[in-house]
Structures are given as structure tokens and as C-alpha cells.
Image 1 (cartoon, rainbow, N blue to C red):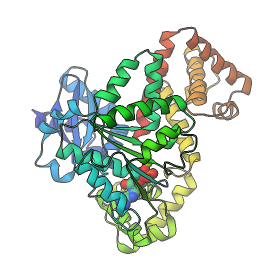
Image 2: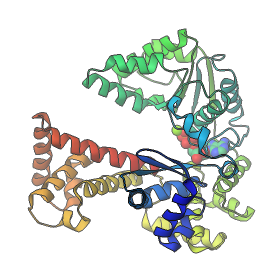
Image 3: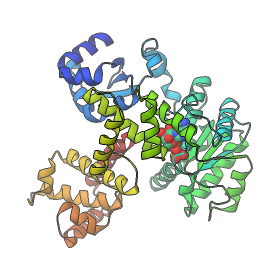
Image 4: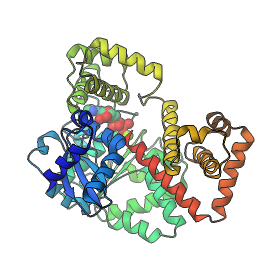
Length: 448
Ligand code: ADP
Ligand code: MG
């Protein structure tokens, strides 16, 4: 049974590790190739998946004497005891997108600046099709994505039969390009025009200057709209300011409800910080919360990163969080220039390292081996691929890659050319490897 399997797993995992991270674990379902494990805290879930995912998969495979992978899913605290696997899993087939369970209407703090957006989103979630489309715009980190997911989560609960799809404009475009490449446009159109009841499109400004994707979006929009399907769009600017967007698309966006999220006032920010801490069962006293908001960060996304770090800190050390801890942690974070997903620069560094990790993993190497001067075939191939990936997916300059890998400029550009040549020459093995690596780091990126 599930309980027995959990006991066996526990007996095979280091005791301290278990006590620290796995106490809320439940086996939700044992499937042919997967074991679904529920974890009662979202951050812990992500952490376990990243750090212990393969350990748990391997251990489970040993126990069951067949190859299985562990899949971790978040079960909110109030559900973890009563609601077991059944319904959660059964709803899956209809589910087109995963919604972040933390981003709900309940966890959204309402203030003057976002009230209209909040109630419009709620209204749309309760009466899909009534205000069509809903267009939400505002600066970065003011809760737009949160509201989209809140709509998704709400609909999954109230109308589990509706097919709700969330995509970022970037994903939409990538999907389009892939379908074009593979000559699968029929599938693409079927997916976006026929198999959807509600379409949530995030960060539509990404399509600025991307005419073809805009054209496709226009047709998708019209088809869904004419069928009375609800469309919700988020953007960092008003429809009018979507410069170079085709006027016909802009006028489509403008024909529904257009609402703004603005920067919240201090009081609302304090409430948001509190809510964020509460969501990770982290207790923060009032003075710590106001210290965070006033002295450290105004940007809500960074605030969340900081709270996440505080959570881990207190989890690992067992210490309560007070102002001293906050100060200390903040300065050490700054010193390491990491962990707070703040600037584009830190994101780039993160991406670079994720790509590196994925390559190392795919080739079964250590970092030292990869960076060693050896010319062994496997290892130099791995280095070539790394250069190629950093250039194409990490958007790094050859100069920076050469610095990072420790080879000279021309070696790196030759490596990149070599891989490109192999790929255009139709080297499928290489292509598969690259796809695999890409999948790996994109997965990892999602967790960050
Ligand atoms: P955007 O998509 O507008 O860039 P996000 O939705 O990603 O912003 O918000 C950034 C972070 O701030 C998220 O963790 C989100 O949950 C949080 N947040 C923003 N506004 C609110 C709010 N009013 N109440 C609670 N959390 C919020
Ligand atoms: Mg967003």
C-alpha cells in the first residue's frame, strides 16, 4: 500500500534528511512508471524535487524492482490530511496547464491600486465569457501573473470540466515555431482553437515585433472569441502602447475590459509581505515585516525571494527569524550575489549555471572534468555542446563563454560552428542530446 511504500522509503533515506524535509510526504499514487508524492509545502516540494528527486526515484525503483520516477506535487496543508490522491489525479486528463497553487484569489491582498483588477479577474472567473477579453496591464511584479493563476485555480475548482490553458506569449510563439518546423500546424490550431474554453496569455508584450506570432494570435483570438470562449491577456503596457502590434490585434484587445494594476501603497505591501510569509508557514513579527518592506525591498518578487530564503534559513538552522537574522542573511546574500532573483544579470548567471549542470549531467561528468584541459573525445564534445548551448540558449557572447570555460575565443567559436554544422548536417544523435539537455535545464529553471 501507499503507507507501506512510504515507510520503506523512509527506512532507506538518511534519517536527518527525512526529518528535515520529508515529514509532510505522502504517497498519493503508485502508477506504472511514476510514483506521485505529495508534499505539504510548496517551497519544500520544489527543493526536494531538485535536490532529492533522483535519489527518491532510484530508491523507489529499488524497492519496487522496476524503473519509476518520483513526481512531487504540492498539497495545501488543509487538504493534506483529509483529501487523498483520488480526485486530484483523476482531474489530470483535462488539465492543460498547471497553476501555481499559491497564487489564488485568497492569497491576493487587495489594495486601492489593484482592486479593480482583482474584482474584474474574479468576475471573469465566475462568469467566463461575460467580459471578453479581459486585458490586465501594469508594471513588473505587481501581481498580474498571480491573478491569471488565481483565475485558473478558481476555475479548476468551480468548473473542473472547463479546459483552461495558461501560456506565456513566449511559449505560444515557441510552440508555433516548433509546429511550423515539424509541419504540425493542424495540431497547433486544433490545440489553441478547438480544445480550449479559457485562454490565459501572459506577458503579451513579448510579441512586439514578432509579426507572424501576432498573426497567429489574431486568428486564435477570433476563433475563440466567436465561440464565446473567454480570453484573458496580461501585459506590461496598455494595448495602445503595444507599439508595432498590428492595429487589428490592438483593437481586439481594446474591445473588452481593460484594467490596470498599480504599485500598492505601504500598508498593502506590508500585508502582502505578511501573506507571503504565512504561505510558507514562516512566522515573521511585525517589526521584521516592516523592516523588510521599508529597508530592503520594494519589489514584490524580490521580497518573495527574500522571504523564501528566510524560510530556508530558519528551517535549516531551527532559528526564529528576527531583525538580526534578516540583516545578516541579506548581507550574505548580497555578498554572494545570488539567490535573490533580482536583476537580469543574476538571472543570466543562474541560467548559465543551469545549462552547465544539465550538460554535466547528460555526459555524466564532474565540473572538474569538464573544465580540465583534456582532449578526450567525450569531454571535448561536452565542452562544445556547452559552448553552443550558452550561446544559443544562454544568450551569451563568445567572449564571455570563452572566459567562463577557460578556452580561447577562436576555440569557442569553432566549437559552436562545429555543433551547428553537425545539426544542419542532420546528426540526430547530437540533436537528441541537445534536446535532452535543454529539457533538463528548462525544467530546472521552472523550479527556480
Ligand atoms: P507580475 O506578473 O505582475 O510581474 P507576479 O504576479 O509575478 O507579478 O507577482 C510577483 C510576486 O508578488 C508574486 O509572488 C505574487 O504572488 C506577489 N504579489 C503581487 N501582488 C500581490 C498581491 N496583491 N497580493 C499577494 N501577493 C502579491
Ligand atoms: Mg508576470
